[in-house]
Each structure stands twice: as C-alpha cells, then as structure tokens.
Length: 615
Image (cartoon, rainbow, N blue to C red; front, side, top):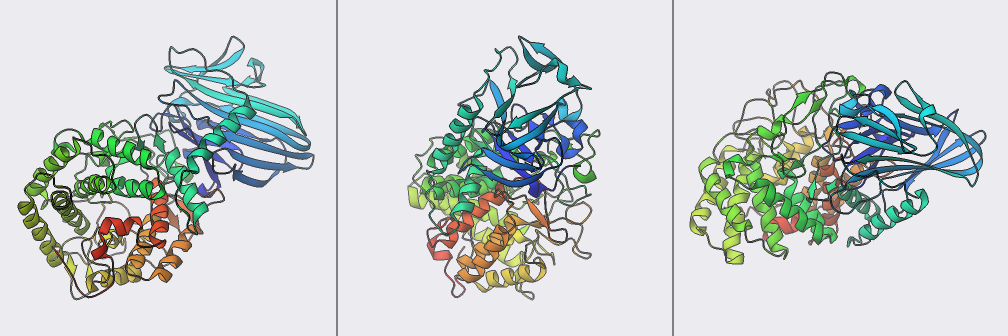
C-alpha cells in the first residue's frame, strides 16, 4: 500500500518528476516527460505496478530527511542496530530538450555496517508492461517497445528474478555505492554513467543558484523559497509550461471517484503564476510562461481550451485505467482529462489579465499578444452571457457561475486599461459599455441582498470560495459591504474547521458538479481567504489563516491540493502547483501594498472604506 502523501518528497529535473517515500521507495515516475506513461505506478496500486526500493534490508528507522540547502537533492538517514546510512536521491538537470533522463540514488555509510536492499520493478504503461531485462556491453538494460532504461551500479543479470532486479549488499562507514537509472531516447547512444558525488554537488549548485535569485526577504522566506523551487521543478524547461501537479488520480476524497489527471498546464493559473514569479524576481520564467500561453492558445478564440499539454498539446483524451486499483482503492484511475473539452468563461479573463499584468510589469511586449487579446474580446462580447462549467470544472449542467461572469468583467476591464494605460488601439468605449453591463448584471443577479453575499451562480443559495477573488481582481474594493458580507458568509458556511471548502456538498445545495459529494478543504481557497483579509486591512486575521495552512506543509515543505481535516491527511494531487503559487502570493500580500493581489486589483480597489463600486 502507498504511504500517506505527507511521507513523499519530490525529485525533478524540469522535464519530469518522481515521488520517493520515507521508506526509500520511488513510487511514481513518468518518463521522459511529466505527461508520459508512468514506469513506477505503485502510488496508484502496489509494488507489482512498478517501484524502486532502496533502504536497509532489516529492521530500521528514519532519523532524518531533508533537501540539501535550497535544492532538490534529497537526503534520508536510516538507522539500524548495526549502523547508519544516508541515501541521496536526485535527478540531474539537463539543459534544453533532454535525450536522456537520469535518477541517481547514492548510499553513503555513516557509521557501522548496514545491509541494504535494492528492489527495482520497472513496469511501463502505468504498471502494465513488464520489460525485457538484458545486458548490453556489461550494463543492465530494460526494453519494452519505445522504452529503453539502463540501470547502472553493483547489479547484473544474476540479480534479475521474476521481472525485478533485487540485490542486498553491505555498506560500511565511509563507503559509498551509486545506483543510476537512465531513460534513453530511441536510437540515441547509451547515457553516460555519472560520478554520484560529483553529480549530486553539481545538481545541488544548479538549484541553489536558481533559488538565490529569489527577491523575497519576508518572514516566510523558507516556505516561499521551497514553494518556488517546487514550481521550478514542475516547469517543463523546453517550453516554459508549468504542470498543475506531477501526478494523476490522487483522490480528493479517500475511496472516492474525484480522481483527475493533473499533469497538464491550466490557463486558470496564468495570472497567479505570472505574478508569483515576478514578485519573487524570476522574470525569465515569467516571460517563458507568457510565451507558453501565447503558443498554446494560438488559433480561433472559440477553440481556446482551459488546459493544454506541456508543449501546448490540445488532445488530452481521458481514459480509465482498469488494471490500477487507485490510491487506497480510490477508483477509477484516469489518464488524460476530459475537462480540456469544457467551456469555461473564466479562462478568457484569466488570459487577458495575465497578458495585462505582463505588460504592466514591464515585460517586453510580444507583438502578437495584443492581436490575440483583441480576438478574445470579439469572442467574449458575443458569449459572455453563455452558461459554462465554471472554475471547478463541474461535470454537471452548465450554469451562470458568478465567478465566470466576474472574470468576463476582468477581461473587459483589462482591455479598457490596455487602451487607457498603454495606448493600444481598440474600441475602448464599446469595451467600457461591456464592462459596465457585466458589472451591473453580476451585482444584480449574482448577489443575494437578504443574505448580504454573492452566490455561486445566478439564483443559487449556495456559496463558492472563488468569490473571495472579487477584491483581488479589482471588481469591488475590499471594504465594500458586499465584499465583507461575502467573506463573512464563506467563513460561516464553507470554513467549518478553519480551512475553506470550494463549495457546499450538503443536501439542499444542489447537484452542482454531477459527482458524489465529499472532498477535502481546498488549500488555495484558504490562502485566498487570507488574501481577502489582507486586502481589507486585517493583516492579523490574514496571518492567522496563512500560518494555519503553513503548518500543513510536510517535513520537506510540500503541499497537496486539499486537506482532509477529519483524517488529518493531505488529499488530491501532490505536490500541487496552485497551492504553492498561492503560498508565495499570500506571503507577498502580507509583506505590504506591493504584493501581487494589490498590483492585480489596482490601488484604488484594495483599501477598506465605503461602497465605491465602479463599473
């Protein structure tokens, strides 16, 4: 059975990523990209579905686990009755498009003598295909179809048994043993065997030099830097795309069916990503993300998707993988994501805002960006009244979600600002009328004056945590009574245990998403609550909420998508980019009026005060 998510650490090389548990087992790895088939899928099943165990053979305990400095070189110390060893796990970072991917595991003897065991079970195709194991010029090679993987170290054909590579050996104090797993592109020469110590130092320096560019100097420095490192690890270097998570089908409710593939890039995250990177000083990464956005959405506006593959692929067909039982028997396991075919109105506003924020931050303009934005506006003018599936990608009927209309207003507002602030050519007066029309409708049809709160969708009695973004996007000032009333209602109805849920699944709330009820609290939404308090000037409450989420980070600083308060466990895909983006953004907001949400909303919209609604 896989471990609790809190027990996993992330390894990455900016092409793909692996999860390694405290027990020394690599239970998830897709080769050669984030969205490739997994060769280790024990995370969604058991050892028979692929894993790589490296740990003491007998009784032992973990006495410490940490990343080396600000890097993704992981150290795990194991103590036994006979001595102590340290295992280093890392993936050397390759420049550009990688012809091979390496995962290195180095065992270092600290004291005494320890008998270690390595057990490698490669299973390509998400745990389904057992490869042919053979030797090639003295190197152990696993071959299956297009896949070729080399295993180097003190193993040979004599250690192959029942489709696995198994060996035990002793490591003494001062001794080191290296194991290297390398994927090689078909037709390319075999990858070189690395010096384990030198490659570890080189990999650590690469990450440390990147981390040292961070400009954040506030009180949450360690958490912010680790989150930024995690976001960098989830970046596909050849294109600049950032995946939502490196995993698929980790459940939002243990034993439930809310299991989705998150190994793709969401337009929904565009502005959050851009502002977080710029706030921390990573302009190159922000530019790369802007370029990925423009490439991905190229084409007719009506064909714009809510998510794409890491290189901008559009076909993300969803299938169910029946041979995997799922994490803690949470089935079905899904590969691909059918939500890519949904209509979500909010992504048009998200893209318009991201490109506006890039321009406002001084990023050199892309000559095609404004043309893309004008085409998006032409589409939006005719379709902003259309019901959609909303930000949470519901699989129930389309509705007039208030957040979706809010983001349509954002699109119109940013179009007007582009003309007013940057002198770009466009029908500003027409867009002003559109902005006012959307504003009036949202305030009339999306607001319940009796309960003094905006609602999830027009005519609904339910709430939605996405409404916490109203002041952050500049729709209404943080001190407007409609905003403060909405915050209070969300705290009262969607925050029963100190963490914010996306929306209600209770009886009477309506069959919103077409799925069985139940999921964890959404960590990003809890950060949004902290942002809302900060924008309203209540930094004390904002810090309390923020630090409550920080306490959920595991021992190496990682967060999942959601948190099951009753079980006190993380749930959902892990680690989750949006959770770490929100962690970085809220830290910036707590540092003062130069924070990302202040910049996004505009200075006139974030101070508490009387009703100053503006269309």
